Length: 399
Image 1: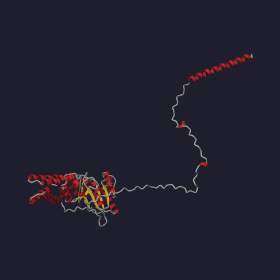
Image 2: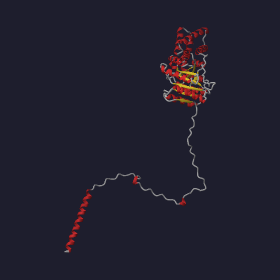
Image 3: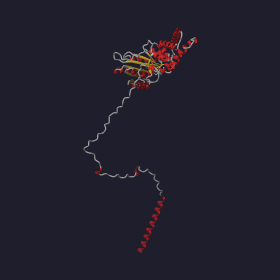
Image 4: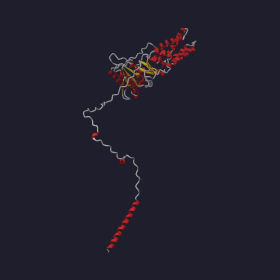
């Protein structure tokens, strides 16, 4: 009986084990294999390989600092880095500038000088030749009345002269043109400090596009070259670029520029510029005004206001009108209106290089009764020259 019970127990155990094996195999067969692992770059994250342990040095192998030696001082670090001031330009001397710039008048020579000499050198000076001489002068913008005067004087002197050698004709034309340009004008710039210590005040006016701001900057160089100290007033508040440009010109020669907010009151800027000039004790204050069309009544009235406000410090010593020589007779209309609003004391003719309109010097002086004091003969910083009638006429006629 005991043997039978033992056999039954063994059979149950065997059958249970076989069933467990079958179920386990089925379960293992139904489980999907795990997805392949994405390879990880070596040395990143948890997969990083352990660094090899560096050999350790004992105390006896380490070089210890000498206790007697003073500690090394750390290099001193300056609190602020001072930038070296930019080197100032040295403007060319104004004496003889017009002579040096003689080549700039080469194109003017063709019509205004050499053309006249060629006509006067003809063997027979008939009426057709004299008409050509008149046309040449009118084309050069001398003006109708000055042209008629010059032709009449030339007719009389050529008739009296009789023989006409090239040297005689050149001398004759030079004398007559010099008389036409005028030698009795006071062409000096009133830029010296007043006896009461107030700086001389110079306003620069003109229409848009005549090169007014550039002329103001170049004039600062002219004054510095003559030993004057200068403060610039950027009263053209309509264009931020104008104030930036004027400040750049000033920085080149060490002149301080007073400027205001864009769109601000130009009269206020001009007033502050003169005030600054008085405080600094400079010789001259140059005020660059905004370009304005002569037909705009409001803008012209504003220009008059600028002058009146500046005069609270004292009289304005110079009012220079900048004219573009290439505009010819059209510039005379502009000049006339400006002269009515502010009292013009001198003319600056720009862009006279490369133009056959040299006669505009005669016409504008006749129109306004004020002299040409400066002429611009190029785009270089020192291409603004004091006007010398003799050198000008000599350059026009040529050798």
